[in-house]
Amino acid sequence: MEIVILPDGAAVGEAAAARIAAVVRQKPEAVLGLSTGSSPLGTYRALAERVRRGEVDLSRARGFALDEYVGLEPGSPQSYAATIARDAVEPLGLDPARVRVPPGDADDLEAACAEYEQAMREAGGVDVQLLGLGANGHIGFNEPTSSFASRTRMKTLAPRTREDNARFFGDDLDAVPLHCVTQGLGTILEARRLLLVAQGEAKAAAVAAMIEGPLSAMVPGSALQLHPAATVLLDEAAASHLLLTDYYRFVEEHRPAWQRVV
Ligand code: GLP
Image: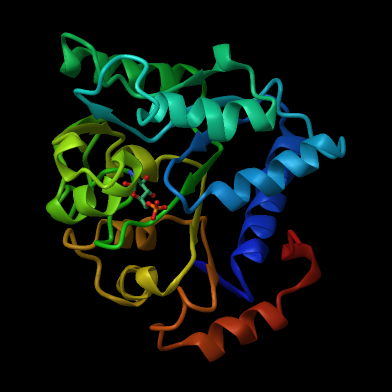
């Protein structure tokens, strides 16, 4: 696992954007794994700036989002379909027809989840998956005790996740859906590269458990330990509970030029 500790959230966004831009420059039709929440916003901002400057063109890239709520009114601004359209598709110049979000409103959710997985396979799989980390260690909406072999499916949100996300629903906990659809940990692990961004002290314990703790279904993010090309970009606060920070900084300082992205 590549662990990079950066001075602040803006630097995390820049570093993640540089990595995604490098993938798309090499493969303009790259398949991007998109994520929601506040964590990736700095990445989308920095990437949009690169698009604006003409350094990278995402118009031919494809996108698959990680997760979606179940049970929201169609067109709800809190849906991840609306969030991805607003935060990623529009500012990045992605083609909306090439971006998909997991089905949250299908009559037959199981069949719709299987079809979503099939569409990801037919697109050739995800080239780079952007991830945030929940304060309870979740990735996507794979809550603690999710199987490492799980595929896209319906889940029940953990109380902590509903509380954390109530801020997107006017602080009204009752308005936060009980259920969601999420790519599974097994699905996420099939992406060619994983890029997890985390900022702030509130994530520090989950970050330390994910990187330095045991592989455990109690910490779904620890699935990254199983991936051969996982990068974790952290600001100082999110890195503050790690034990081996001196080593991670040493690795960065001595990274061979051929391995550098930024
Ligand atoms: C949300 C999303 C995740 C996200 C995580 C962290 O509920 N389902 O994909 O990474 O929780 O959210 P935030 O970045 O807002 O802290």
